[in-house]
Length: 136
Image (tube, rainbow, N blue to C red; front, side):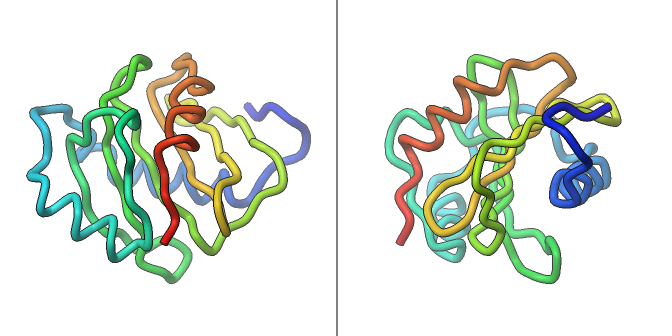
């Protein structure tokens, strides 16, 4: 079930990636600050205050590249975020599938994808991330 028109291959790939890593979506306490900083630096970004609490940070393979994959506690609940520097989109893309709701948001030179449980309102989380991401 897709919203916003025709199927979006990037959204398909995001859903597939998240489904493969669904077991890692367990929310716990905050991730160690040093580990988060290393992952963000390798991805060419920094997070200003306001993004939410980072619960997990790692680098994952996505479309042949290493990308930061974060789990952030937001008002919508835990949200997986893939930072997609090399995947620009012109406008936000909302999608659903496999028990997840998602949004791909244009940002900096590329985009980022947010994925949460079906029905989560990701607009505010996306707006908070747009304001918090500093591209290096």
